[in-house]
Length: 262
Image 1 (cartoon, rainbow, N blue to C red):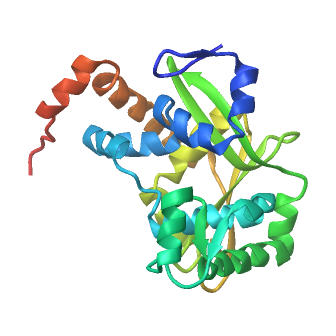
Image 2: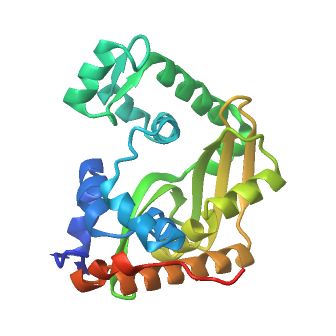
């Protein structure tokens, strides 16, 4: 059984089947289970996480681009369900469609074209194509860690070898040095460590593509990288338990301060 943050108990098989439904995964579980994104916010501070619970970032352009590129490459069968409009997002047609269907279902033709050609660049690259060959796509998993429910969805995973491949898009020129910097800044080590734990994976690889030049990078994770990531996982859990485990703790957030000596 899996117990969610709101106290709901689920049969593991039943909840895994429900997690293939994006509205359940991002909606219900977005509120009642933690994730790598949650832990990143918690590591930035409890007030940053608290704000994220009330703030909707779905309209952020980088997130929109990433979501659409993932869909074009990993779940192309879902493209037919989207609403594609001509012109810009400022047009009346786009605004009306978004108000009716939600911004996660409506894209401009320009956004669609951009995502398509990025996905094509990955498919046409022999090394990237080999890396993804034979993998299962958008596979969900859920586990309790230290009594807290965590959700995860692997972009691509080889279930036989336990190898997870995670797709990242970037506007920064791709090099080992630049991606190491991005991985540290955005706590990709936390995500890699958490996913390896939840899926029981033995290898984690980032497949990176530059959105403009279509340059591709393939970066494997060292044990040191994963160890640092697991430290951040544990730190995030500790921050959650001290500040969000009950209503009394949440009320005390008004007294939260950052102290130091300069």
